[in-house]
Amino acid sequence: MTSTHTGSAAAPTRRDDVASRLLRSSETLSFDPAQEVDWETPLDTNFHGTSPEWSTLYGTSYWDEMTPEQQRELTRQEAASVASTGIWFEMILQQMVLRDFYAKDPTDPAFQWALTEIADECRHSIMFARGAAKLRAPAYRPSRLVVELGRAFKTLAFGEAAYAAILVAEEVLDVMQRDWMRDERVVPFVRTVNNIHVVEESRHMKFAREETRTRLAGAGPVRRQIQALVVAGAAYFIVTSMVSRKVYANAGLDPDRAVREAKRNEHHKSLLRSSCAGLMEFLNSAGLLTKAATWFYKRANLI
View 1: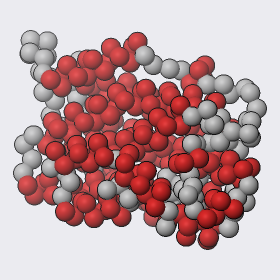
View 2: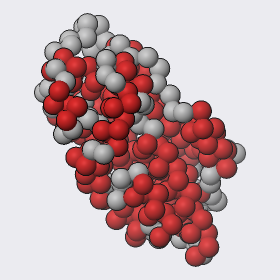
View 3: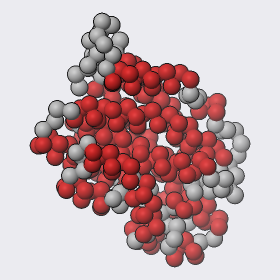
View 4: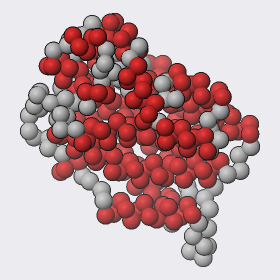
């Protein structure tokens, strides 16, 4: 991206205004997870890790057969898996943003906001890591293939593809976590973690939308088709990696049966689609919801 900021004599652009507002917001409403989250109180296993309705097995016959203790353990393992996937993608995000602003004008509000966003993401990743450990979960990681695809994506993606992919990942998490942070059935420290992430990520999503629009302003139809496909592919692998199949074994379930039932779970698919309605509207308005891209979103149950 070529910065539109040319120095103090230049009139502020819309992009400058957005970045400046986000910087002011971060000064007045940011959190230190080390202080805000209750890390000391032992885990109370009478609580869920997510809203039960967001479990990949909720609404299936397997869920009905599980004891309340198994259901709670499953949602705790699923919450830890989502957190671990969040760490993986936030590390990709940080590298893309750093590369994008390398050697750019440091007096540009967007440059300063980019560094602020990276600092937020560092804190979020540590917060998610500590949260997963407190939920007594192992380190869940995407498959080796997805990890290598992520490595290629963070190296090669540029412009609107990078920021639109950031937006996709954060929008899906945002809707889930808004439900979890309000749900008194969810363990209190997880609710605090979700609240912090929702508040601070709302600024990140606003910037990602602005950057996506800015980068696409002069894009031709071929570039839009290619970038739409790149974003959709990234979205597919992010969303389908959120819950590792290993969570089922760690919750004491038969992983083969659990995976089969989760794949057929229309309730969970419906939740994902409803959570992405606003996102798909934005991608469509930006020209990034092409026929080819729609195939990937449907495969990931996002549309």
